[in-house]
Amino acid sequence: MLTELMPSKEFIQGLPKAELHLHIEGTLEPELKLQLADKNQMDIGFKTIDEIKESYLFNSLPSFLEVYYSGMSVLQTEDDFYQLAWAYLEKAAQHNVRRAELFFDPQAHTSRGVTFETVFNGYYRAVSESDKLGISTDLIMCFLRDMSAESAAETLEQALPYKDKILGVGLDSDEKGNPPLKFAEVFRKAKAEGFRLTMHCDIDQENSIEHIRQVLFDIGVERIDHGTNIVENQEYVDYINKHTIGLTCCPVSNGFVVDDMKGQEIIELLEQGVKVTINSDDPAYFQSYISDDLYALAQVYNLTTEQVVQLAKNSFEIAWISDEEKTKFLAEVDAYYQASSAMK
Image 1 (cartoon, rainbow, N blue to C red):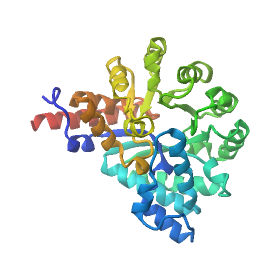
Image 2: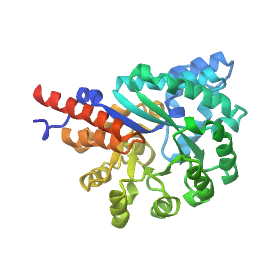
Image 3: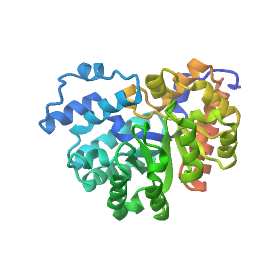
Image 4: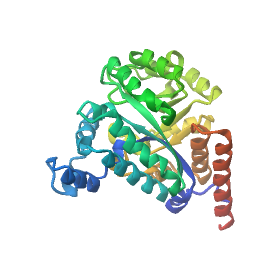
């Protein structure tokens, strides 16, 4: 049996998994960034891939976001957005991602003059073709919390003509001074329109536990993105366990932003039965796709194969898919695990 062994990188890469915390703009690899800058005749201040990579020096959420938002200026046309999303989906297929729920940030583009229609149509075209790669895919539209609630409300209105093609809404960007309650009304309207709800509660932020309280009891989210500070309040841990509210965690990006993967918290939650999951967040910037995150966590914290398999199962169990799809994907995980066990 594999139970007591740490899994290999090959095992983790082949393991069927769902990615539920992935910012599609955060998959803009240096090669594509340079290619789009050249196509769109833009001077982005870098001439080589190495120069771009050298600029990826982050020690906080704000320092990361500064590089993140400036980089996406190369996205100008519908085809640019399509290329970005398709490049990620091809990479995800190599990691045996069977389900992907992709965050996208329309305000980051409409605020610089790109239309909502341009952004959405490019992304959706890639999503609608993802079955060719064996991936079930949907889009989750995020509001930028460091912009106004009025801007979020305007973005929701822009999205309504496409609401049958957008699975849910989320909240991301700089959390400091931007609590969940700032967006309570727009999330109430989004829920009334049929959107699923999630919100970022970034790690070790100002008022982290209060923000978690707000997303759980004032907003009523179905998932929390990041959220491992919840271990500081056992009552809240018990609540998400009882109501099957999952956490979409990103250990490698955690390590860049606060120098702590939050692995101990992830393991503690996993052992309590919380539906905690592992995801890659912004893999082009942290140079770690989902299997890399899982492997890094397993190596640093000596996870067993059984624990890694449970993390993969959790990802399907809290995915926003039908029960029939969950059953299918969970069976794939079991079959893969059993086949790997038989080879030992």
